[in-house]
Length: 343
Image (cartoon, rainbow, N blue to C red; front, side):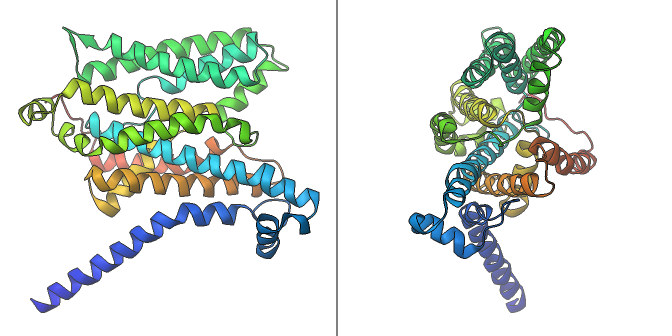
């Protein structure tokens, strides 16, 4: 009996240490990313550039303050946003294989970006049009899945599949009419996902990301109830339609904002919440903040690899797919394709 209690205490301490490490890792990795890249900088030089900029050269200040710091912060924000959105979707839809692109956000944003690149010359229009069409795609999915005055989980998923397919077809049309020498390469690179062009002007997207993350965080215990099924949630006095709208709306907001910053990046919203569940279980009170920290850390690491592995930067979407694909296969084998039905 005493040995069992000692083992329990040891496991609890190890879990506590692991959670503390997860919590502080984004801040540590943001700092580490400042001296990772093809332009070599030591830890001492980075400290000098941060706290005594006058002692550093112009090139060093530009590399740290204008290139590496904004993209590290953007990578952390996007990783946290996609991970939290994935965890929220998986809980609300009661499906472990759900990702943030389920309701057509990615294809909607992709169509908006293509439209802006082809007809408006890209630039700042790309971000605003991708954001607007991402939100429009989810609204259309919600309306398409609304049957008999209510939107069921199955109806919303089917609506998302339909609207995603529609925007996928529209993206194909945009690619077909795009200039193959200038516009098409830009569109292709956008769909691969990258932080290469990120600067402080992109930080406007942090506002909707923060708003969406806050909304999900405040509603996180409701996700536990919704994951039990609609009927059970009704019995417990939860307004199912209202909280589905709030949680899905928050997840959509952070996903759309993330796509505006980095383009399309897959797998993060699928992989990171499951790693979080391995640490803290299915309780979303703990899972949501843990998923945010894991996603931020993962994306910073991937971005560092993308810009330092070769002389030519690798799009981060390629690297996340390389990591996510085998994990998805493992997850599919583990769940045996099991799907939950509406409660």
